[in-house]
Length: 183
Ligand SMILES: [Zn+2]
Image (cartoon, rainbow, N blue to C red):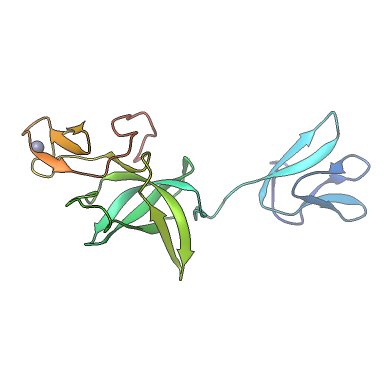
């Protein structure tokens, strides 16, 4: 028990020492973990519990993800997920997001950074939604010249060449402190 990470079945302590809390069970002698996680001991109440941690990097329904647009198709975009609930993931999981209901030419372009909410797992595919105001493009560049852009309602304008283009912007667009990408 040098580190306090557990896998299911790991002994956390003896029952004379601790009571069994969340994500643990007693086997008659010991308190053991039921999940992969981090042990937390409440010294006052002597309750041992385990905080669940995600190790898979696979987002679950209702998780908020931030990712890089990998492909743009006529009715959907494919996004390579970089963050799940603000936790960096290197699992290279992709999700797809329907965009055909937007009456816009461009929702997001390849390499744009977007925020999405996971809506479903279907046949091994992860589906996400971009509909709510906080979801959409967080970072993009000018399609023509690669220059930086400023938002204009639901459009963006290039500060270099003045090209105006459409995107489905997140209401967090331009708040560049959201997370540092690409580390
Ligand atoms: Zn430009």
